[in-house]
Image (cartoon, rainbow, N blue to C red; front, side):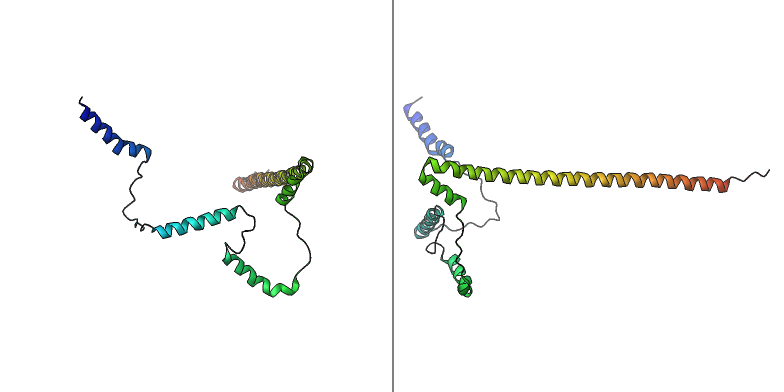
Length: 178
């Protein structure tokens, strides 16, 4: 083959086939779908900025009023009537906060905190398993009672049918006189 033909084939491969392999095109949209307009550069930048702020805020436990002002407006409205009823009770730290404090203290403080977490999980799992087994046994017991009730009803119906059959036989058969 000539060099020119080889070069053209390589060029076509890179231009069409390789592009499709690296970035495959999706199936075309159905005809009833309306295409949205493309975002402007300003809109793209705004979306990227908003997404980055929310992503960065997701790493913090309390997002704060700077990033979610609408959520805090609702809280302020609900807190105003209850200002006179404030309690001085401190809330207990969460498990995550306990672990964070223990991790700062080193391995000596972290080990008991982790043991507490795992024991709590184990006891919750054990209680849930006991509750499940108890509910399962009650369900089996109810099914067995229903089965026994239906069996006794069937037996009673058969006995009643036999009695009725014997009565009809007695009526149909003439009595012999002696």
